[in-house]
Amino acid sequence: MLKKAKVLKKGDTVCTVSSSWGGAGDADLRFRYEIGKKRLEEMGVNVVEMPHTLAGSQYVYENPQARAADLNAAFANPEIKAIFSCIGGSDSVRMLPYLDWDVIIANPKIYIGYSDSTITHLICHKAGFTSFYGPSILAEFAENNKMFEYTKDWVEKVLFSPAPLGEIKPFEEFTMDYVPWKPETQHIDKKMIPDRGYELLQGSGVVEGRLLGGCLDVWEFVKGTDLFPDKEYFEGAILFFETSEDTPSPDFIEFWLRNYATMGVLQKVNGIIFGKPYQEKYYEEYKERILKVLKEIDSNIPVFYNGSFGHNEPMCVIPYGVMAQLDCDNMTFTILESATEE
Image (cartoon, rainbow, N blue to C red; front, side):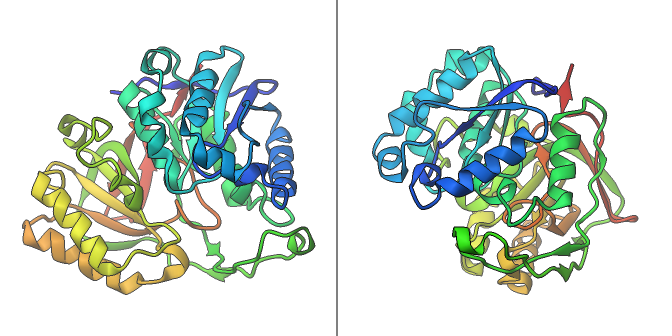
């Protein structure tokens, strides 16, 4: 069972980090960072940067030790109550040799991000405390014109309240629009389209388990490393998996999941919820491959599809390690407890 981070309160100081891609500090994207920072401040917190948050993409890429130093310092600083990821990327895993595990383990606190931030979530998981799969500063906080209400509501509900979170209803509308991150396009509203809601791929009844997951693409980086969760954490878990904007081919989904079956991971869990594929590419093909692999191991566990998290606009926030429920009869995904504590 993971420890829970302290709930955020108005007036708290939080920090931003560039633990993967360093674009927040690039001249052409700094405007976007400042918008996201301002939106976070409007939630009632004081936002500060770590020393290398805005060092720029080239420096951040070349210096994974500086990224790790920022993360270590953020956990060590008692004035910083939460850590917000600026953006994902592809190489957070390069920080691992430089982490101060004693500091991280001794200072559980809120960490939030998605995509390549899955690496930092697994760091938190290894350190023994809950973290939060949710929006980043450059993308969702800095959304054109304003944050999506669905995203904003979930950030406030999950991070600023110690109450049980309850049902995560799927968003009613989402967008597949791509708008370049430029000052002259920041005012363009994205077109919203109706969502399909959750789909039940297989299973019946009601199952419960502790949440574990993230971006499937990024989980590939940690297979065979000490960062990969111990098998005990998969026992009775509910996995939440999603894929990135790189839209991996259905073959890769099949290969990755078959590997988890070979490791015995899929046989241990109570259920899985998959996020909506980015822009719904391979929407049907992914379903076919998921069911194919589960059939190979004669698994009838409940599997929900088209979840409103990960590489989607808008998105909810999913806490690691807390008890959740999949109800196949009523098609509900529910967080049964709080994700933070006073």
